[in-house]
Image 1 (cartoon, rainbow, N blue to C red):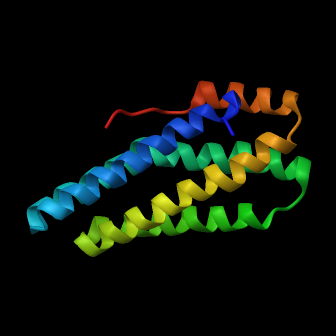
Image 2: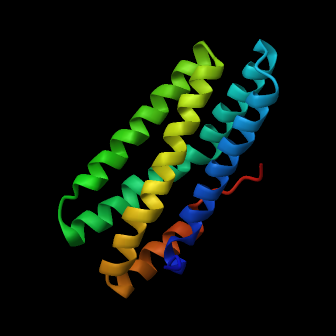
Length: 150
């Protein structure tokens, strides 16, 4: 199913996150030296600070909150928020001790998290929330979503 236009700003950020993971994995496949790992960890941290902080905030304070106001408490939302916190912990750990393994775990979680949001949560939301609510959410997302170029 095509993505509802109201959710496109978050889907674009998801694309950026997946691209970060692909680029990181490729770079690790070619060079696992300490200097390259440090560079890749810095790029992941920068991406987190520039885009993911904004992304998590928009999802949690706007999209998840609005969805649960309309649909009631959702186990999937609780799981997605828990994954946000785990990603934040991974970033904090990489700030202190970057490693190829930490980068791989980060990319694994971020990729699976994004795919879960897209295939499960976004699909559910765009099929169940009223058009007016989606449009209102979309307007806020369009105004506030940060987009970086990798």
